[in-house]
Length: 498
Image 1 (spheres, rainbow, N blue to C red):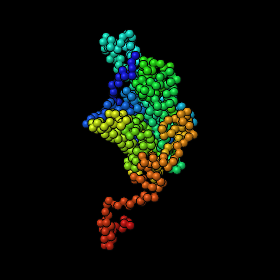
Image 2 (image 1 turned 45 degrees about the horizontal axis):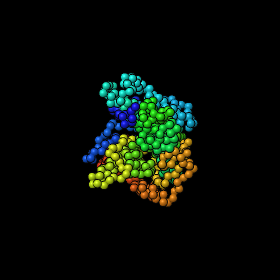
Image 3 (image 1 turned 135 degrees about the horizontal axis):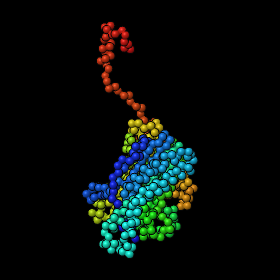
Image 4 (image 1 turned 60 degrees about the vertical axis):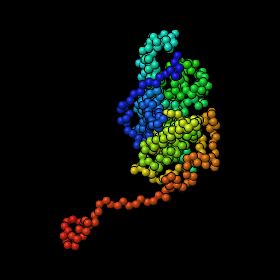
């Protein structure tokens, strides 16, 4: 029976042009990304493996848009498959005639399950080969004995196990009829930044982290008969950290072969998503951020912040001031996180050399893939050459301590990003005390009063009128010649020079 440590990583492949690349791109969105990194002692970086993240941002028509981020593990095959199949399962007739929130949420739910079923069917040939190999290796042999007698069979079996462990987490956002719907499995996140009645920009997490810190997921696993204390100690379920994903046969159909999962009554890792919506997209909705977990986990490990969602939103706000495109904004945020993570690691590495232990929880010598998809609703881009999605007025954001509030979904979320439900009282709030506001402002360096300016964000009244554009051709000589010809009565009578 293989343990988690014995499951190898599969070989990685590059992917060519796919059919979804030809679908219309949403021009109101942009994507930033950075491949995983191994840090070397000389400060240089190198990829540990090809990027396993995938994303799409599609415009169907003026009222329908679809966005997705997929974070693959043990290879990019499952993420690539899920990306293509998810588009098909949502946009090819499934939304026809659907009007209510529950109907649309069910479309998203069924899409995830259909993608999971299709992916498992696509690996049938490898499952059959695996079963055949297992039949030729006697069960009573130890791993060493099996390899000694059947080296080629054991090597091929390990390679197949690596391929079958490939899976992906996902977050999908659908804008449909002026409403926003979000579905996710795993730890990809969706953050909606919107203003309250006082003009304060608040960050709401619309996704659920399916991991071993989620009390609801721990309860579900415990009810299946698993030892959750052991799982929490190892921080993994089989060969992955997430309790929900698409793909990864070994922790699903093959979970009985993994030592720590053998006691489960049914598949412990599932593909059923959490779905929330529909959230009305009114003028309070500013922008949406979809991301792979490498984005916020890299920032958390580098800064040890407990308000990572707010800091990510502030990074985006800063780049709205500085960049001219949405892709530039998303990429600048990703690059900033990458620099922070690398610099903190190198600083800690230097501390080790002079015999100073690094702080607890500091970054290790690697960073995961990062993908950030940004969808703008009505946040101003002052430097944009043309931005049809934003109003003429300048929006001035401020940040305060977060509150627990409903987002139009069946669950209530707070800044800590856990469902309120049975864990926390959904009617409770975090009061905006002066101390709390100052704490957040000191971290984010955000403006504190309406109409003030900070780091280039100013009120509408402070913006100077545009200067006249000077002509780039000098017509003075022409007018002089016309006037001279008029005085000499040499102007053609059939042409008007007025």
